[in-house]
Image (tube, rainbow, N blue to C red; front, side):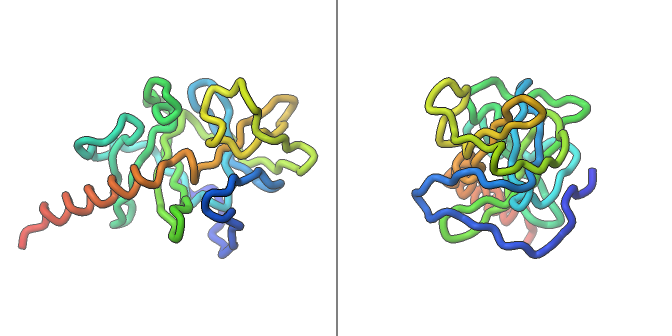
Length: 186
């Protein structure tokens, strides 16, 4: 699959560390995960690639599928389904990896997110945004930026900066880089 968004140099407003992000009007990529529809803002998306089996890294939690080599860069691949405490995402014909850039405090980290299927890019207006639910969501409330009304139903707008634990990503990236260094003959 090719990149969904044109490559433009756009700035992204990132809330200060420790503050909760709220959903803002704009364009969102919708995708299926475990029979539910989710969305993430397109400004944090680098590209969408066909699912390829990641290289597993020992001693990682179930939500970490492993790493992939993306044009020479080591990119950790996360399974959001497992991160949400559900069974791992089953790989199907439409399964793909969404390559995103997330805020890890003072820097940005590239990561891959396994999704069942990518749907479309939608404009969500301010009038169609609601705050995250106080209860009743099937995932942790701090993983949700808000709810968007799309075609008569609600879509969960994810906060990937929180859903993709920076500690796990940093550990995985470091471990895979060390593994690559050991594999290179001197």
